[in-house]
Length: 285
Image (cartoon, rainbow, N blue to C red; front, side, top):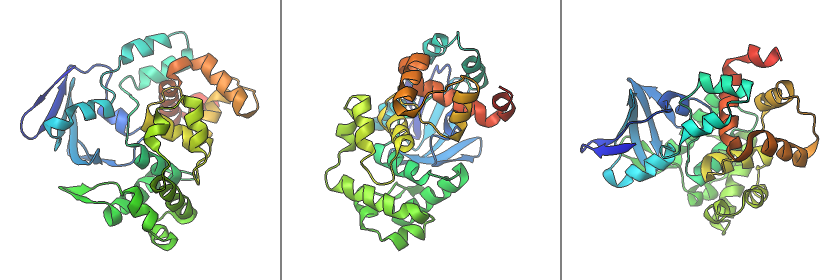
């Protein structure tokens, strides 16, 4: 993979095992919308028009100085062909990979990811996206063509009523509480450098963050690829397809580590995306 800059944006060339639409429509990010023949969204502080033509990903609005940051955001430097090959002996996961061979796990800003998945509790993707966008429009810094995600300081300063007016509902106290803890010294950057189990446990000290939200923040915002968020869809897959019968988190983590290994989070993303679009394949097991 190499990249070029033409004055309007950055283009990444020679991409294999990459699909922009699969990456952006798989439930791991909430700030991209279909636009023209691609997607428009805000990421890493830039309003971006992204489109894919064959093996080329073009990001209009991204300066040359941010090219490597966006390569990291889309996880373009990782060998997904090798990862997919490592799962070849798992029939159901192989089905998921064939369905979404171009799916990759994004690496998003940790605070934005944390708040987005606090909002995700007992929610659906359409509504999560609407709440996140309202927060950004009302309290994020204006960009050329959009609004950045609000800073921890800004969210910490808002009242519960102001957050509820954005659609946050009962999650308002969790959002402001987590933002205040970050402002008071809870370092997401330091947490991302901890061993996975330690980071996961530390994240659950934040308001509104249980194991599922912690695993989402760890996987999509901190790069812990062994993280395996467990929601209703994944429970159906793990219990119905893989016949998991353990109890408690320790049993679950042992099962995940044994079954999926160091790239459990990538496996989870294939399984989650496939299950949501093939309910009959899960229910029939």
